[in-house]
Amino acid sequence: MKSMTTAPSQHRISGYQAKVVASTTAGFGLENMDVMFLSFALSSIISQLHLSSMQAGSIATVTNIGMLLGGVFFGVLADRIGRIKVFTYTIFIFALATAAMSVANNLWTIYLCRFIAGIGAGGEYGIGMTVLAESFPKKQLGKVSSYVGIAGQIGAIGASLLATLILPMYGWHVLFLFGLFPVVITFFIRKHLVESATFKKEKEQRGQIRALFQTKSLAYQTIALMIMAIVQIAGYFGLMNWLPTIMQKQLNLSVAGSSSWMLSTIFGMSIGMLTFGWILDKIGPRVAFGIFLVASALGVFWLTLPRDMMSLLFVGTMVGYFSNGMFAGYGAVVSRLYPTEVRATANNVIMNVGRCVGGFSSLIIGWILDNYSVTTVMFFISALYILSFIVMLTVKNLKAASYFGD
Image (tube, rainbow, N blue to C red; front, side, top):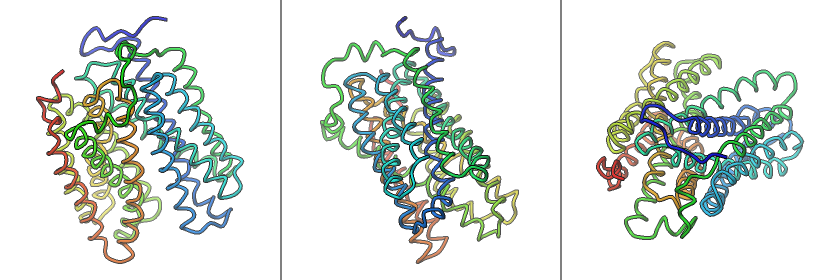
């Protein structure tokens, strides 16, 4: 098998790099599709198993805990024994655990399946981003990382389409059988991808979590990036889980109208990811994140302005553009700021802490709506983005000069 080569120019990618992009984007897109199956099937599961709201909500919590544990374990393992090998393991795990939901007929079996699926999914993202980072020049990472984020949105749309076709006719058990799709990707990955020369060269201190906190400045950087990741995920869950309901009440929208708003928001997110990666590569993370975080903090209040469907769709697109456009940028930034021997560990630990903690924003927003007002929710989400902006400014290595230096 031929070893990995770099691109012949900054504007064209090699055949091997194309395979890396295809593998990582397909893996993440199908992983997100599997994760989203639960969202679309949840009402059917609640009805069939007679679950309470608390029991149903805890399924997602169990999944998030699995993601955190899987992210830490597989991140360390990938740095120690190889990214490609562990990447395929994680895909197998979340695919098979998702498919196992097809025979789950009680809450505890569902908990087990989702916990194991979370373990696999938590490991997959950071390792995939690391494989990308070690296959491309540093100044292209923002652009290529954005492809992974867009693949996640395509996966969500795929889950929506499959749910629409499968749930009414065959029920939620059959829907989860489609979780086996990602298994096909693993054969492609194992056959066509190899470990990077950089990884093979590094032999010492691989996969040590303490390396993320080795000095005061490094510990601060790691914690700061965790806070930013938490805000990113919290904003996403607030936007996708609660704001459609809020908009239905505010504009008296039907479910179909709410779905149109969701599609416009997903479209905005995808365009945002694509352009954010380009901006990140051109002007550096401090300015790129600064623009998007401030716009997100203000954009939450834009949602109170529309009084008709067309203006709501436009605002939804713009809010999605800024609020989730930043998502793929985290993988690019973490991959640049941490050395080869702990790169997968750093990606998985930082992003999965964000997933696990940020996922609780849905519960917090629900509590705010029960006790206060929609305006209070807007201030809460906006304050999170401002917090992330302030924290981002304090991370010294996010200055353009530091980031672009080799």
